[in-house]
Image 1 (cartoon, rainbow, N blue to C red):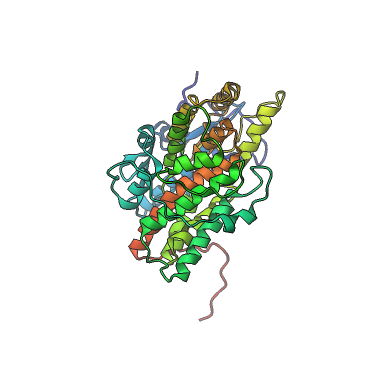
Image 2 (image 1 turned 135 degrees about the horizontal axis):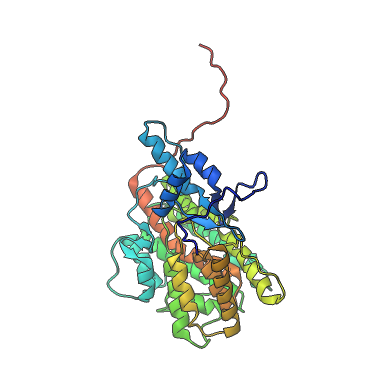
Amino acid sequence: MTDQHELPPEDTVTHSPGDTGRRVNDVEYVRRDEALAMLGIKKESLYTYVSRGLIKTLPEPGKRTHLYRKSDLEKLSTRAGAKAGGAPVAQALRYGEPVVQTWICDISPAGPYYRGHLATTLASEGRPFEYVADLLWGGLPPGRDRPWPRVEVDLTATLNGNVAQGDKGSFSPIRLLAMAALHLSALEIAEDTAGRSDVRMSGVQLISSFAGVSGYFGSARTYQPAEDEEFVAQRILRGFGLSHCPGQDKLLAIMHAALVLSADNELSAPTFCARIASSAGVDVYASVASALMAQAGPMQAGGMLDLGQYLTEMLTQEDRPAAYASIPCFGHPLYDRDPRAELLLDMIQDLPGEAVIKERLQRFVSAVHQNAGTYPNLFGALVILLRVLGLPASAAVYLHCVGRTAGWIAHAAEQRLSGLMLRPRARYMGARTTRSV
C-alpha cells in the first residue's frame, strides 16, 4: 500500500481540460502541476513539503492521484515572497497567517484551546457549558459548576409570530436568534446603556434567551421559559422534548459536550464579523446578531442543512447509490481529523435510541473516510447527533449557534477593550488610468 507521503507518479494520468482540482467544504484543492507552478519548485521539493506536513493532501476517489490543499500552498508562497524581499501576497484573510491578536482561543492538532484549556478535555470531564462560557469571558475557570441565575427577558410575544405551526424544520433558527439579539439590543439602547453594560451579565441574558428558542423544536412549538437552577443544556433538552427520555445522564452529558465543543474555534468568518461590529462600537447583542447573519450563509450553516437532507435520503432510500466525494461537513481546513467531532461521535454510540440508525450512520462515516479520505467536522457530528435524537438538521444549526455565542461574546469584548477599529486595507488589482500631472 502506498504511504500518504509517498505519492504515486501522476505523469501518466490524463485529466480533462479545465479539470484542475475541486473544492471540499470550502477547502480548495489543486493538482500537482498547479501546485508546482504556484511554488515554482520541482516535484521532489513538493513531496518533501508534504512529508513534513506543510502541505495537506487528499486522495481523489477512484484515482491514484492526490490533490494539494491550496491554502497551504498560498501560505508557503507568501513566506517565500517575504523572505525574498518582495511584497507578500495578501492571503492572510483565508486560513493564512494570523491577522488579529487574541488571548481567547488557540488552534492545535488536538483541537481548540480555550484560554489554555483543551476543549475536548473540558468536554470529556463533563464541564457544563456555563463553566466554559465564564472561562472564555473572564479568563479564569469558575470555582464550581453551577447554573446561571434567571435573568432573561421573556421573548414569547416577540418570536412566536415568526414560527408557523407544523414541521419542526420549517423555520430558520438563526433568524429567530438574530431577532432575539436585536430585541435585547433595542432594549439596551432604550435604557441608554448601550456598550456600557457588564459583558458577563449581557452574555448570560443573551444565551439564556437563546436557550428558550429550543422550545420551537418541541411539540409545544413555543418559547421555552427557564426554570430555577437549570443548566442551559437541561433547558435545551426540555425544549427539544427529550427531558423524559431514557438515559438522561448520557443525554445531558452529550448536550453539555456539544455546547462546550462549539464555544469557539478562533477567527471563523462569523467571529470576525462579531469583532468588526464590536470594533465599530455596537453593543454585544448587535455584535452577536452580525455573527449570526454570517453564520446563516451556505458556506457555514447551509452545509449542515445540506448534510441533513443527504442523510435523510440515505436513511429512507435503501437502494440509493452511495456517493462519497464532496459530502457536506466532512473535512476541515484546520484539522486532518476534527478532534471535536471524534469525541462527539464516540459519545453518540452510548446514547439510547434506534440502534439501526446509529449503525447505518457509523457505517456511512467509515465508508466516506475509507473512500474519500475525509471525516466529519464538528458541523457534521452535530447533524449526526441530532439525527440520532430524532431532530432535524436545523436543530443542529441552532445548537451550534447557542454554543458559539459564548465565543462571539468573548471576541466582541476583547476587540472592544483593544480600543481599535478593524479596518483592513485592500490591494487594488484593476486597471489604472494615467494620472495627469
